[in-house]
Image (cartoon, rainbow, N blue to C red):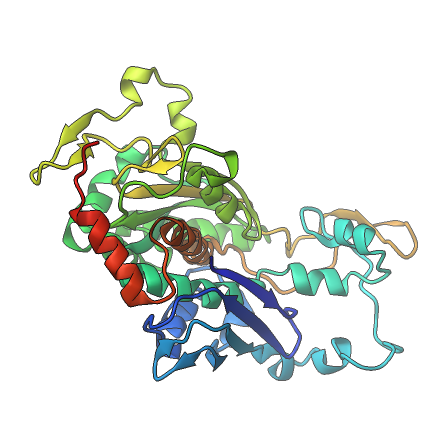
Length: 401
């Protein structure tokens, strides 16, 4: 199975990543990864760091002549802020030395990992917590998960996303955006959805809603506040039978919710119309089974989000993520100085007003990674040609027991 590790701090010299378990002969180039690293910077309301960073991945191992080798793949992404910023990060984040003369950060921000991290690791300085818990880590996560995405793409499985809400502005029900989403899906699957969303400054599929969100972000900026929001991740081309109902940890819907909530600041997720289905009668929730034009099983609707009993049913996977407002506010919040234990207002660390559009692209990456492992669990193989033989054999087998 594929697994990955990320290392590095937000203001350290670089981010490092290792991907292990990737089958051989999967097409992979730095450009394919950099495309999604660039998309991670999309969105109105981003902070000053977006002007400093130019994320470009360097592949050190595991790839030869633009194909994976089956051996561990290693990456590096340099942090532009390390040298370009004027905050003296080479001294503040030095690997060597004893830290004498470096100012300690002692004002934890409500809603951030600051205080909990200090308590866990017994730091007297919040800086180590700030720098590792930062969403800057998601740059390397996108790089690592883009490798898994390449495997899915080779089998016609594509992952996309779009934003449905920023703060108080957005859609209240999937019925308000489902027609536009499905229209794009019919044109080019989930890839068409993310390409259309990328044209919007807020990654929304409606120009009028985009303008309303921009106004809302500007209002929040004037109020020195921050905004959360919600987004939808879609996966097209998914075969039936990924995941399983036989054990709790193999249920794919549980794995997908964990994938979303593992991203910094994501506090909830649903598969299909999960939250809304809880308030509806079963007759309006469960998707009637039909035969499509190819005499294959399908569903008339997709309230289940493509997963029943922890297993894919052949319909597009739909997962929605919910992001809280960023906890770094220009306007101070009440806190306590950990050095003096005196009540004080928080200090400001450079941040975004909102990064919901960016979070949606990171969610694409984590969903792709989760699905790639479910795909390998079912079809297996050490190389792309071997996996393809397994997939072809499964497709040609009788579908009825």
